Length: 128
Image (cartoon, rainbow, N blue to C red):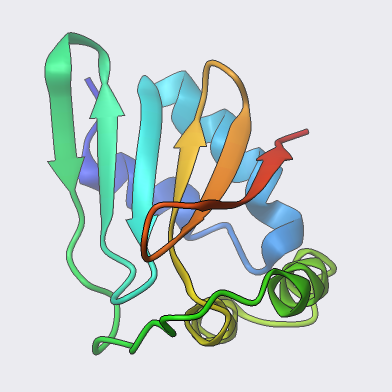
């Protein structure tokens, strides 16, 4: 079983979007099957085998998520983040402005799916 401390230790190595694939590989080895991060305050719910569920605390004060999604702007901001040009909080603020409410990482399929406030998929991305 994994712990929040183990996940935090793995996450502490993430400095930009370029580090995301290594983070995913590390927490997958810990036994995380999926997780959902909520842009509003960046709290995350981690799921493991046997219905294990652990939630992290909020990382910042609540952001307002736009009611209207802007997938074009989101794709630009995501690419910028993955190139290491923005930090995590900036990426979350960009997500909020573009109407992205959350993302779900599925370890079995190695995908990260971004959703808007009404549950529409904004992007499904393969994790390398």
